[in-house]
Length: 487
Ligand code: BG6
Image (tube, rainbow, N blue to C red; front, top):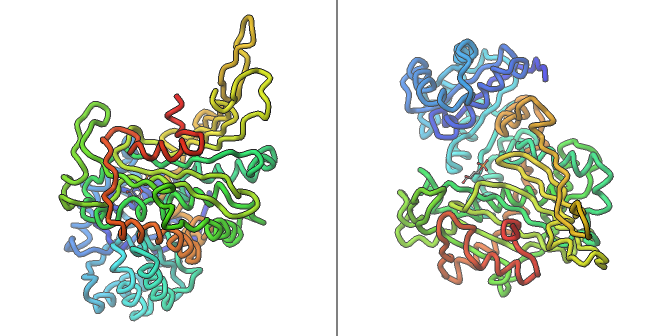
């Protein structure tokens, strides 16, 4: 993708964890690839913890370089990347410091992007300070998740930011939308007529969407303990995936057509009845256990976590969509930390044959199923039944396999790289619009409230397992089970 759109990319939280692991490595990768970033484009890092540009570049060399290009760093590209970087020392608590930023960027070229890789409590003060020095004009602002803690706090941030930036200037990041396989899901659904007639209640029995992690809370115990899995993963990533799986074909791929269709799904989610919560929602918390043979500690003993914490690290939900396409089809969503494997996948279970002349239940035998694996390796598999060679009619499950890395030799683009390029080039389709975010909070909030009111602790599960047994029992009530339980 050749570009000549010049830019000034201002990175707030320039020495933070996200800048170190994701944002600067993604910008480097785009720079290294060539042709993706205009030569004149500049990165202006804003931070408090470095004295000047020299010290900041030293920090970048020490902390960011280990996260770039797994196969070794291209030193020439690295050196020219550093030349793009400017630095402004600002105390975010001091709005007058923003005149320093205004002076630093006033002669820099291109569209201005302000990336707020900071905690959400700083979003509004930063936007106001930018406006006070006139930097909100003709600019784009990128807001990282979590955007608020609940509907009220997210509305408060959106209202205040909305007074300073128009909606078309606001890019709310959900990095799952930038993942290559999620793009492919759109291609699969809307580029092939084959699936469309089957993609509905008449032919689909149930759908599972899992984002499982092996990692625990790492160094983020403090943040996570006030957040929990429902806010960290369900309100955003899982509901976004669900809306892409379930949406109607958009009229075009322009940003509002896609987002309008996703919004319709979010608005059609059947509200959770508090009296049913025990049947449709499972919350868990990891205890000690083993991940790939290594002992790992319990959540409640992680640094930054309160010893009696009742924060959930696992959630499983049964969700229904109240529209003609999906009425009555259960969508099972699941996410958790310290689970048995790192995997993100969507499983579409089609209905079994109405009468099996061959004497097997096709679904049980692992057929009539589409598995879209988003990570760690991207594959799409369509499971069918086939006759085993030899005498007699013995059936076995086989699959048609689409392994993207074998088809397309070039490497995949990291989610952050794609999303940052989209911001620079003004493409909004993969960013969450305010009304989508509100609809997601509106649906999630009764669950949060009910959990809080009931005061019940989450169900324990051993690290390295697939979460509390109740998550399996929930599916058993519908005569089904999680994919890994079949194998
Ligand atoms: C983030 C969450 O949004 O997504 C993290 O805050 C989680 O808790 C991460 O670990 C998972 O992302 P990925 O891309 O590694 O699956």
